[in-house]
Length: 374
Image 1 (tube, rainbow, N blue to C red):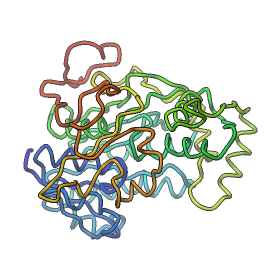
Image 2: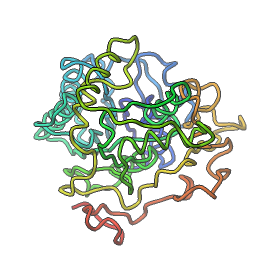
Image 3: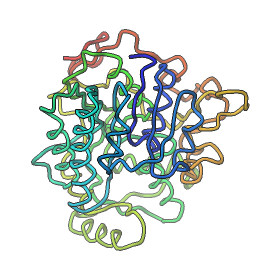
Image 4: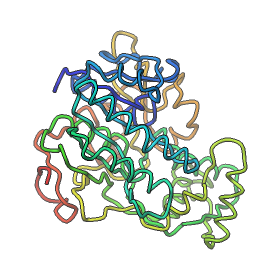
C-alpha cells in the first residue's frame, strides 16, 4: 500500500500528528480533514499531506472524504463527556465511517480504540469504546483494532497536566492512585498504526498497545513532578484519596470551566487496571520505556531549515503553546532525532527505528523473537 492515499480522521490531534508524520515517512499520501485548517497547522507542511476543511459528522461530507482513498485511520475520541457525547464520538461516528467506506468501496480500516474497552466496563468511556468496536465488526471491512494504554509524549495532556499542577500545588491529593497503567509512547502507537496498514496479516485482529513497564497512577504523577524539576527534582507529595472523596473532588472539577483534570467517569474507568489483559496479541515487545528524555522533533522538510510542523511542541505550534513543561519532561531539541541526548534514551530514534520483520506476539511471548499477528 505504499504511496497509497490514506484518510486520517483525527490527524490534527496529539496522536494524529505522529501518525501522519509516520505515514509520510513510509511513503503514503495522507489526507487530514478538520473543521478549521488552522487546527492542522502542525501537519499541513508535511510533503504529500493534504488538509481539507470538512465536518466528519456530516454523512455526505464523510462519504466524499473517503472516496478515492485506499485506507482509513480513525483516531477520533474524547475522554470527557456525558453518555450522549461518548455515543456520538465513539459509536455513531464509527457507524458513519463504515457506511461511508461501503459506499465508496473502501475496505481497509485501522481503528484506534482504548485498552479496557468492555461492554460491561465500569465507565461510560469504556463501554462506548467497546460499542464502537462492535458496530465495526461484521461490516465487511478489512478491520484492525488497536487498544492503547495511556499514551505519553511531549505534548500529552496526562503527564504534563500533573506536572503543571505540581508547579502551583504543595501536594497532590489523588483518587485512584493505586490503579496500574502501562504507558505507551505516542511514536510507538503511530508506528503500530503504520505497521497494521503495511501488514495484511493484521486484518481482523485486535491488538493491545502497551509499554513494557507498569506504574500506578500515583507513581506516574510523582515522576511527572520529578521530571519537571519540581522541588529540585523531588516532586510534590502524592496523597491517596478514598474513593468517595475522589468522587466529590471529580464532581467539583467538572463544575469548573474548561476540560476537567479528572471526571467521575475517569474515576469509574480506574476501578480496573489499565494493563494488558493477556487475552489478546500485544504490541509491547518493541515499545519504548517511559523515561524523562524521549521527545523528538521531525526532520526538516524542504529548505526552511527547521521543521514547520514539529511533533514535539515546536515554537509557533499548538503543542508548544499547550505544553509548557514539554522540554522539562521530555528534553527534545530541534534538529531531528539525531540531536537527542542519547544518554537518557532507551530506544532508537524514529529515524533509525524500524520493524522490517516484526510480528506481534501474545504478552507471554513478548520478549521473544519477532512475530506475526495471531
